[in-house]
Each structure stands twice: as C-alpha cells, then as structure tokens.
Length: 377
Image (cartoon, rainbow, N blue to C red; front, side, top):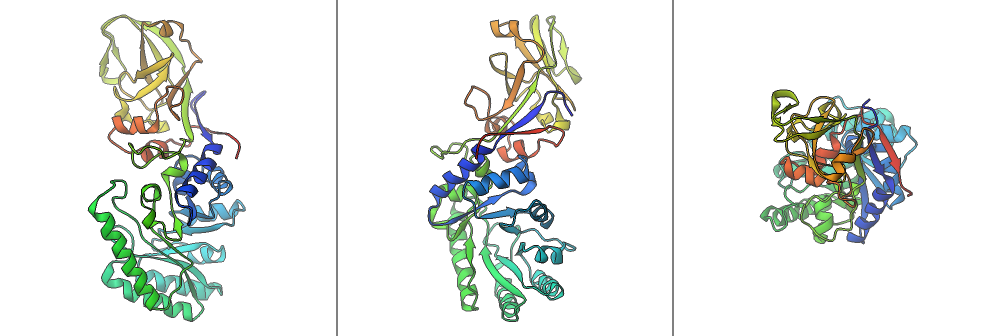
C-alpha cells in the first residue's frame, strides 16, 4: 500500500447526484449502476449512498457483483446483465436477482435453472437496437419474446423488464439516437403483442438521462453520472459533483541541477536548477503510464505537470522555483484529481489530456489505494 495515498470518496456527493438525476427524469425510477466496484468508488458504500439519494434499483454487470450486494444485506431490486455460459443462474434466482437476457439459449438456460430452484426467475429481455454489442438482434427478437412468454405462462419466468442501450447518446444529435429510439419502440410492440407486460422499460444511460427525456420510459440507468462525472464533457448545468479525490502525500522534495534527466528513460530533462517532488503513486495504483509528461497534478499551490516517466509506484513533479515551490516539503499533499473546486484537476481533465474518458480514470484506481469515505448522506 503506498504510504499516505488515498482515494477520498464523498458519499454525500453520490447521494446528491442521484437526487439530481431524479430531477432530470422526474417521471421515471432511477437505477444506480454499481458495477466494477462502483466505478472504482467502492460498490457497497456507493450502493447505499445511491439508495439514500432515491435510487430504487441497482445494476451490475455480473451475477457475482449482485451476490455481493445480497451478502451485504442489500435486497433492492438488482439486475445483472452479462451472463456468460456457466454463470451461477440458480444462485441468482434463489437470491432474487433479475437477469438480463440477450439470447434464446439464455431463456432456455434460465428456465431450466428456475425449474431446478422451484421459483420463477425474473428476467429483463435486452434488444439490440443498434449498439451491436449485447442484446438480441432484430430478426431473432420475436423468437426470444415468444419463448419468454411461454415460460412466463408456465410460471417459470417473470419478464420484469425490456431494455436496450444507446451507442452514441453522448453525442447529442447523432443520427443513431433517433434510429435506436424507433427500434426500441418497435421491440416493445412485439413484446406487447406476445402478451408481455414488463414492470419497467429502460433505455437511458447517463447521457440520455441528462439530455433525452423521450428515452426515459419507466426507469433510467445513469452510470458515471451517479459518481458526479458527465458523459458529455462540455455539457453545462448538470448539477453533478465528482465524488472521488485521488491524492497522496509527497514522499520527497529535493533540488537538482540544470540538465538532469528525470525518471526512467530521461524523457524529461530539467532546463534549469529546480525543485522536484516525488509522489508515491504509479501505474501499480492505476495512474496511467501514458500520463508521463502530460497529466496535471495540484501541488505546492498550483497545477503542475508530471515530469518524466510514470513508474510502478511513483512519479515526479517539477515544482520549479516559484514561491510556493520553495516552501514545499515531504508530507504535503499532491492532488491528482478531485471535484475541481480548489483548483485541482478533475478526472475529466485527466481524460482530456490522455485521450480517454473519465470512466477509465476513476475505475482503474487499484485496490492498493485505500478508499476513505467522507460526507453525509
């Protein structure tokens, strides 16, 4: 564990973000998506904060994640939507976990598991409306719907939901958005004609929750927005507040001469006599090696740029010769990203300079970095 490093997670911010998202979709229920250890924030604390903020559903990628919620005593309606062969279907049905269905063979497998457990399985049928990832493609959709309807009539399944997922909702005005909405309406009509009456129809992810009210239906599924990060970088007025601050105490401060190469490969060379600070976080902690000479860090009173190669356990900042640098010492905090309210970079700032998305920045922070929970909710 790196000394003095921590990812501070403001649970109050998560709870407030869910409340904000409810206001964006006032006629719909809200699912708090807590997959991937709550996008790196900690699944169980994040789930509880989301429920406190008004979420009435939880979402995970895998059954194993949903089972962890159940073991922690969280019995809220929970959907797990990636079910590879060998997934623990009987355990999920026994635990009352809703299951996403993206293929005919899954209807058959879940039906068999329900027969084994002696209780009906709750399923959400996923139609592929154009993302071409998970979901049932259009020409196979009627067969899957009919199979699910037969199993429901036999008391083995309950079709609790019908859903899909946008491909480009983070690009407002993209032509695929209208096409996917139309395809989803068509899929719902097929399900209705087959006699299915799902409890919830859901399509909207974070971007659609914020910008596409016509996509809200009965339930919205904001993911990254629940953690305070916008899926659309330049979208104003979201009301969201980033929940995670990644920081570390500086381990060492020292003067070095002009012309000194810094870190592996000497990819940074000092152009004057200067002050360097060593920050004990590296790619073993989830700091991308690609941040070398690129990513911003708030230290010694202002933003600095990582100087030289990011190593497994550490990186270097060139503090220069300004007045703040002169007073820097070991034990002072360096903030990699946070809410941005005190001049520190945000996860979006990191994503922008690294040509990625803020989802990756927060989710990749490794378990080696302790999560410290703050905030009332």
